[in-house]
Length: 302
View 1: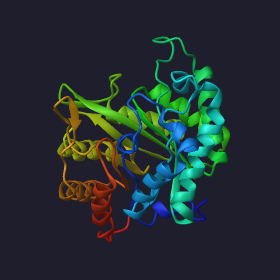
View 2: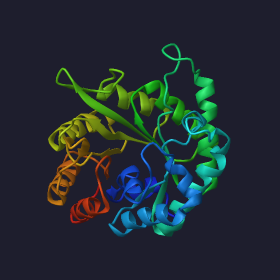
View 3: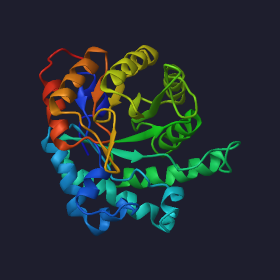
View 4: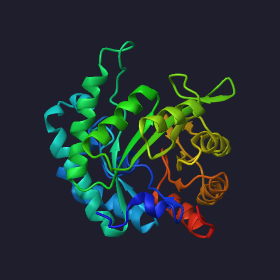
């Protein structure tokens, strides 16, 4: 593990997180709809190669290949009995690729359903599922936990609670996915940007922000960042935009943002007060390299 605590380093300088994992796995042959987490054991060289490409691009934070790692998500592939081994392997592969000079984020994505009363899953059931995943990620060497792509603050809160139950001192990052609704940024569940930040922070999140988004332009991410920073107060903010707004071409989703555009966006996000910048859908090591150079060319402290 990195000997320097993540929050301590963040108090000194802005950091760069990595980018998309799923599309990188598919580029290496992962079939559409297949469980990419099995590659942590079956093809660790491919997963580690993606992590290493991001690390070589200048990324400080390396995210484990464990987005769908709860028993609920793994059950869709008949793998619910392998939560511990698949998540532990995800963290170990990321740790080996990132080395001791990066910080490994144990990735915890949505469980894939709704909590009561909308759905049938109780908060206690979800908390247990998150704790099982997070315990394995920490055992594998994760330095922090990333609860990402949230739309329901209640689910995000359970994720924070589960992480802190595993280790009260572990830094927890919470990021939401937003869309424009009536000209405002809201999650799929209708939660405003400000309320999403406040509820995550109240639950104990150490870093808050956004990853991904529905049909958001790079300009939109910058505007959203300003709202998140204002709502977060003294809590550090992370923003991981997609590579621009997607377009459909021949039945495929295409992201067209250039390295120059992503670098310019990174600079604007820093100016808005963001402390950690990374990428989400459509981003690549080449795009993250441009963003990293932009971030590290700015000498002003966080």
